[in-house]
Length: 293
Ligand SMILES: [Zn+2]
Image (cartoon, rainbow, N blue to C red; front, side, top):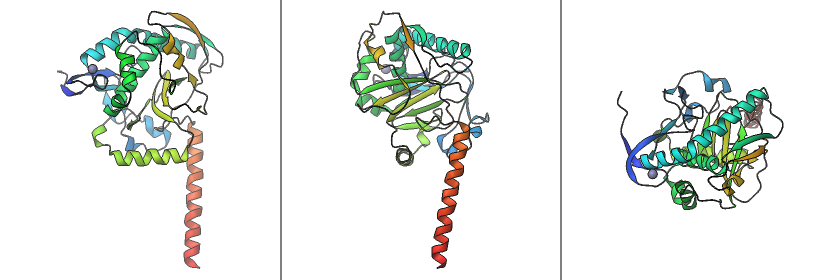
């Protein structure tokens, strides 16, 4: 079947041209299987099991979208793809070895700069054009393979996740797997995000990608994050050619909702839902009682 032609602005370099399908994460990092995506509006207030009932938008080639020009796709793929896939494979090995409960520092043998550059490349893909306009330093960082160092207010955090869910949250777009972005109204999303930030004021996440075996958070701001994710921003200090041993301890977080930074178990989600329903009932009861007085 002929692949469709999609034109638009490349999310990294900004050139208007024919766009190529960018796998997020790269195919070699376990993203070469059928995935099922759901539109974000289908997921609100749903039981976690609804997330994985096998129904929704199906992509046989893995998760991703037409987001990058061929040059950006090929360059970043050639420079960072293998190193990133290797990082993902080592992560899965650790998870399997520790039977899903790693609690120690484990040795990774990796190209740190290439890994972090692939992660930032993925954040370009899941964010809209505004991301490129706001962060010219990050454009330079991924398009020049030798460029090192991130601004101190940019942090990349990682964690293990066992699946089966994936989650993609861009600063200006949200989807469980980007399905129909055109149908998403900005105002509605802003409302939902504002609500989320009211409920979870400590959330400073700008973007998040969770795709087993790993999740990644891009955070802006110098304030310390009150969470236990592992900060790997220092990967940006290594030269491109450095292949080195690093000992990392990553938390294991479940991903059961579309909310950025929400690592509640299914049980916690159900309990919270019950609690909120109870509170809502109490409020309604009180209102009714006031009316009747
Ligand atoms: Zn490009």
